[in-house]
Image (tube, rainbow, N blue to C red; front, side, top):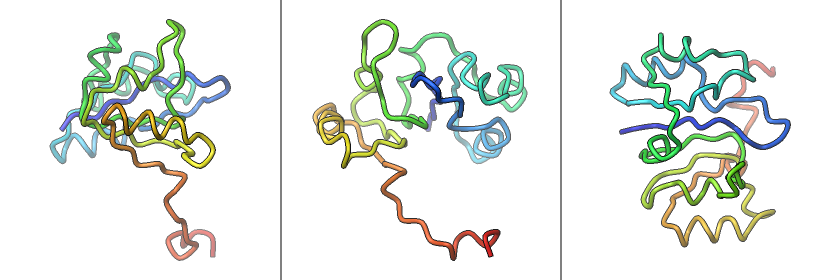
Length: 135
């Protein structure tokens, strides 16, 4: 199973959807992980840190998005080439992101039409019972 980590292109977003330490743990579990070149720079993670963790750093968006699972922080938006990131995701892939389907129902509909499965992280209930550090 191949997991892709694209660079976040939403203005002001400095986070990355997976850090090298987590990537190395998933690789040990049998996953293959690809990260877009410089995806972690704004979050303080270099390409070399990803490479050291066993992650493949790729330049090609086509290669990156031809994966089973796409992890993003922010919803898919239009890139510099005027192409929406959603159009790069292959049919049958799983997109895990903050999609906000109640605020962007047309985007949720486009995902369904494109055959892209989505887990919208903003729709997952949170409980303080799962956050022991808060007590």
